[in-house]
Image 1 (spheres, rainbow, N blue to C red):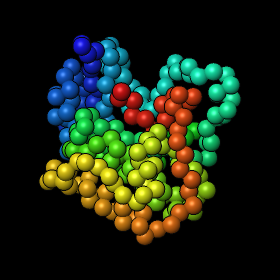
Image 2: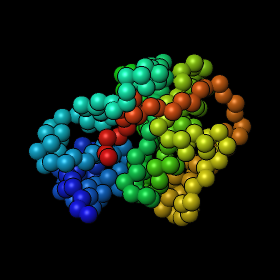
Image 3: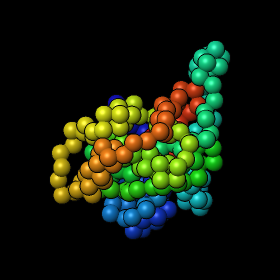
Image 4: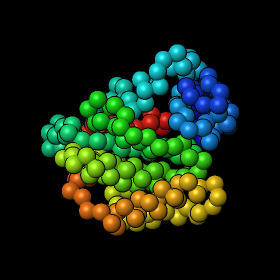
Length: 212
């Protein structure tokens, strides 16, 4: 089965620009704190994006139209904008991973971690949720938390990170965060409600990195 050609824009990295191969892009973002990058399906789009701002291109659901019926959409309703949305991105499984949280309505970034050299999307989603819980508790906030990961919701509920990824020197920074997150869950109570983001009704979660 053929795969679509992708082009990679790097706004922040060891070198910036547009790269035609993932491995070339990967070299620029690995071990670079706060790297900013995204894939595009055409060279023209990637080059145009490079002239713009990273934050104008992530977490977008341009042209989204739900395939759900009017009755289904009415039942689901609209998102609660008194909330934070969290998401993760992993280039490979395992692969370079990062996660972040944003204001659901404005998409303003509240926190971001990574990219880390090795992690998984599930681990990132879990860490994002716990990070969000800790921030909301610290600020005594009544906001809810949105995630599009049922796996992460389950791990948080059980206070475990049930990943099959084996620990090694490369992923130690990620597992250090995992250990801290699990410890936080076991030693803190919280009132924050965690809610599944309805992707089929609302499009990609606002915290999405837009790299699918």
